[in-house]
Length: 78
Image (cartoon, rainbow, N blue to C red; front, side):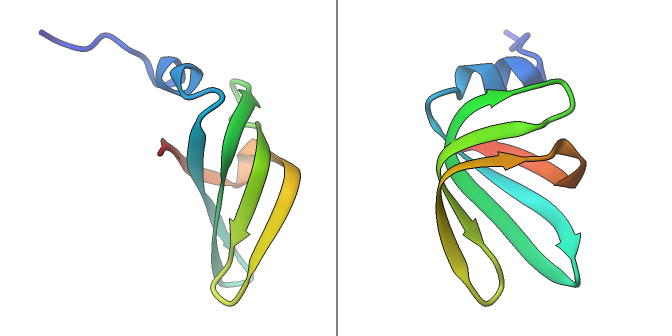
């Protein structure tokens, strides 16, 4: 049997759960963001709760974080 879920259906199922977002390189540095998915839209603008930003040299924690979809390479439910 095939799974007829669309990509946004998978993200919708991941709401209130943790996701990992890989961002485009900025200034040559690879960055990822993880946190609890609160909301998203068709442009992949993403709202996270209890977010952590992992850079090559540092990790920063945020209570809430908005990630603009233009910067997203991919989103993966954890």
